[in-house]
Every structure is written in structure tokens, then in C-alpha cells.
Length: 353
Image 1: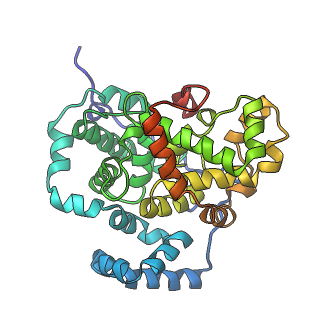
Image 2: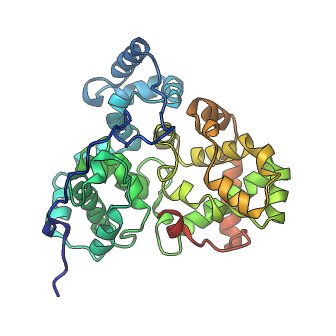
């Protein structure tokens, strides 16, 4: 029987119109992301960013070399939404990859076949199902997502496709074209600027295991009381933090917070994932140390709304120092060649359904 491709399916009916937030997600009760700056302040901020970037990004590299501290400070305050897609491409190195590989994306999408096509089709409807762009079954958004994921699974057959990659590609597609999103995915997984992420998706999830081991150590060193309570209740990071690393908080976190984290992640690297995770636990520390196992698991997957305010959480994260210790833990992990967590990673796929 011939394998069906996404192009063989007819688009489903358009979903019935409902109120959306400013990012395109269907509004839920009590789900009102802050509108951010006043219009005047936002316009002034955009003008500053346009001057910093130059036309089409022409001044970016020069500005970063001259004033790296200004760039870092502005990125940490949040990239203007209207410029986010372009800036993400500039800080990730994906724009250079695109320019060096003309026609490659089209070749991968049109002329190549992937062993992961059916898996991708199966998972597409699970990616941002409440966003208007991805809602229509086999519609334009789902087709774009399929194309990007299929192209990557051909480009890097060792990684192929793993559930969780869809949230990275889906987030990128909300801010850029298919081809731009593909090359940014390549930049992340292959390490154009920062450490490669491909180990998060390879067989056995080796990088996830390393990161969770390091996170566990950092948490116990910085919050010994909470670490002791987690040990007593037999809680380890694989039970709540796997998808933080696999999707860089894009799976279950409020979208306005995920965007702010991604701004910093693309510029500073994976250390912001550790910092945000530790900041969350610190913010909720006094409540978490009182909870038994079942309530702990629920709390660690459903943080309170006030903890998810980027203007509260991110300043807490920025002051947490992890870089030097992370490097030490990485060397220790590689030397030992084993996981220091009490259990293997289980249920990651279940967590993202």
C-alpha cells in the first residue's frame, strides 16, 4: 500500500471563529497575557532596535561588536514582536546558513522522502492546537510545519524526527517563513553559535540526560532544603523538567513568557533554561517543601500564574550564576559516563501529549 503524504490530504474545515489573544491563540478564561508597554514606549523601543539592526540586518554584526553589553541588556528586556523573527535569525546564525545554501530547502521538501513522514503527520495536530495558524487540519500552518520537520528529518537522518521538535519548528513558523524556520532549526541543532542541541533528540536522549543530571545537582546545591525534600519524596527532574529542555519552555509555558525566554536563549544559549528552571523552584520554594509526592508532581507541572510573569521571573533568573558550575558538571558527567539521577528518563512523550 502506497504511503500517504500530507499533500494527499484535503484541508479540513476552518475552525469556527473565536476571540484570540494578541499572539493568535484562542482566548481561554483567565488567560489575558499582558499587553506590555504603552504604545508610545513600544514605538520608541522599536525605533532603537531598527537603528541597532540596520536595513535587513545590515548593521547588526557591527553593533554587536561595538556595544555587546547594550545588545545583551536590550535582548533581556525583550525583542519587539514586530522584529522578533529577523532578530532571531541574526542572533542564531541562521541567516548566514540560508545565504550559503540557496535552493537546499526546496530540494529537501520537494524531491526527497523521509522515513519519518507518517510520524510527523501523526504529531502535527498536537503542536500549538489552540493557535489559529495551526488549527485547520491539513491547512497552511500544518503543511508548513510538516514541510520544515520533513526537510530536517532528511537533512539530518541520524536525528530524523522526534516528538518535541514540532514545538521548536512551530514557534519559529509564527515569526518567519518555512525556509527561514528550517535554517534556524539547523542552526540550533547543529550548533551554529552555541552548543549543538541535536543530542536532545538522538536515540536515548543523551543531552537531556546530561542536562537533567546537571540541573539536579544545581538545584540541590542552591536549594538544599528543597533538594532534601525532593529526595525524600523520590522526585527527580526527569518527572517535570524534560520538556523544559526538549522544547525550551515552548510546550506548556505561557506564550508571552516563552518568547522572552527564547529571545535570551538564542543569544546566550542553554544556560537560560537552567536559570529559569532554578528561578521557578526558588520562587515556589516555600510551598514546594510542604507538599507530598502527588501534589508535588502536580505543582511542578502547573506553576502559579504569578510565577509565570516574565517581569518577575526573568530578573530572578538573570542573577543566578550557573556558567562555571555547568562546565564543571559537564566535565564530571562525561568523565563518569553515567547518570547521577535515581531513575532513567521516562514518560517524556506522555508529558507532551
